[in-house]
Length: 342
Ligand SMILES: Nc1ncnc2c1ncn2[C@@H]1O[C@H](COP(=O)(O)OP(=O)(O)O)[C@@H](O)[C@H]1O
Ligand SMILES: N[C@@H](CCC(=O)OP(=O)(O)O)C(=O)O
Image 1 (cartoon, rainbow, N blue to C red):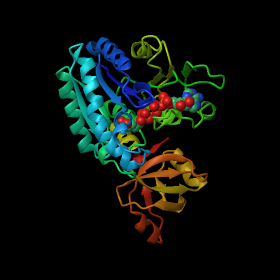
Image 2 (spheres, protein in one colour; image 1 turned 180 degrees about the vertical axis):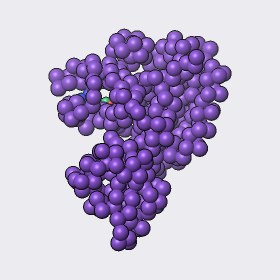
Image 3 (cartoon, rainbow, N blue to C red; image 1 turned 135 degrees about the vertical axis):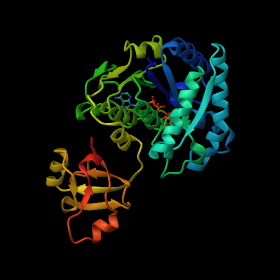
Image 4 (cartoon, rainbow, N blue to C red; image 1 turned 90 degrees about the vertical axis):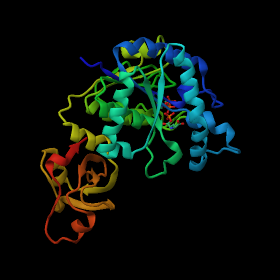
């Protein structure tokens, strides 16, 4: 039987010091714990930290997009060399995998990535993924590596996604770690503020956004602190951090790809009747659309918003925005099979 797939994400604030230097003690800990888990798992590490590791070389660094891209180009080899150093101690080779959005939005490209990882695992090598910041512009960027880790975990059908945080887990209003979350609802979201660490991009809001996506697609997620107990090993055994239970997912792999890997081009705001219809698994007709936002062509992926502009689904458009707006008849905006509800 093939081994379960485990995706583990490390944020910048978890693996670098405040001045951006890589925290070598943490990397040593990661290598020793991952080495314990490797015999029984196919592991993918998703590591941030390239920008933090390279920014001291960029003069008067202020964090603009071009400075971040340059810092990442400098920091990537520094970071990966450190990982290599610590994993070599355990006789494990690591590989670098720099990802861009189209590697996920184009299914053919994703299948290439999958084949490469499978070859690496066959050879006992652990892939370390990061966003390819060097060429990522604003439109194409992942929102952060929490998203990249989620796309990898769902695309590979991981048994668990572990996300490290500098604060040990999801904290309640008293600052205590919430040990278990059955469903990420508004009550859970209400304990999260927009605070984030000085080097991280996403903070806890982003972690919860993508944790919600992963759990809805059937993957259990643990948000944990590397400095607690045996960090990764304890998180896998659900002894530390916050455990987010997986929901029952009945999506096929194409629908999962629609829900996660696609590049959203435009949006459609629905009236109440249309929102109800798609909730009952019916196709979406243009008569129920109040407004289109952004531009999209036939076959592209759009987000469906309810009348309060809250995202309720993702869908593949049957017609372009231009066709939909110019037609005097009600057209099918998206077929029921191409709509994935949130
Ligand atoms: N309820 C909450 N529980 C935990 N962290 C929270 C909460 N609300 C806001 N935060 C903030 O989210 C951040 C956690 O993300 P962190 O691990 O630092 O980021 P990254 O992985 O992006 O480097 C912290 O700065 C923390 O203060
Ligand atoms: N790709 C960037 C990090 C982006 C990011 O998601 O950061 P974080 O919020 O710390 O996980 C880097 O390597 O610096």
